[in-house]
Image (cartoon, rainbow, N blue to C red; front, top):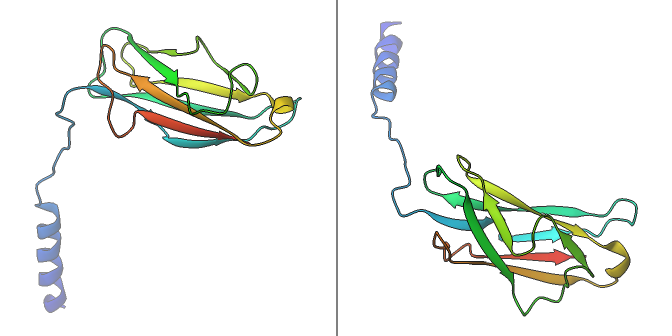
Length: 142
């Protein structure tokens, strides 16, 4: 019995004596899209499909609102008002003070989606720089 207890006690001491690491982001704050790819199912006229795209603040939360602008890439085949609608003011989103994200809700217009369309959103540099790896979100409307 002692042969089992000693290794077990040593194992427990080893496991619980490890230093706990706290990982914190220590780079300049930036904004990014999440997800960078999404699918918006058109749904029906009575229940159109929708998808939520987050604009995230990477870094410490701010005491004031953070205004972020985005543009629709010219390579997009989906047209606002024809194939989809956007919550809020198109091209602008505000991350509220003491928050880490804001939502862009895209809603399909099913009657006009007879074939798949692509919507490419790109964040613009503003008060905060844009994460180079997550500056674009591509949404497939189908």
